[in-house]
Image: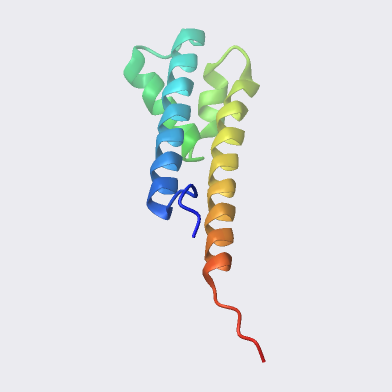
Length: 100
């Protein structure tokens, strides 16, 4: 057994923290670039909209460079896909192989 390999719980904590980092970074970016967002609370909501893929076009319309929202979209999607792939890879390693 390799003790340096992170456990599933550790992987989930790292993924959740990474998601929060992307969320906070994006909210800060939206706040700095958009004069249409009033206050940091609206920037947090804008980041939540994009991070959950619910209202990307609304936030894109508020920014001077519309394509900036895709930084958050791609980062979030990559994190989700890599987390699922890591989980499935871990499950596959734990599945016993039956010799016939």
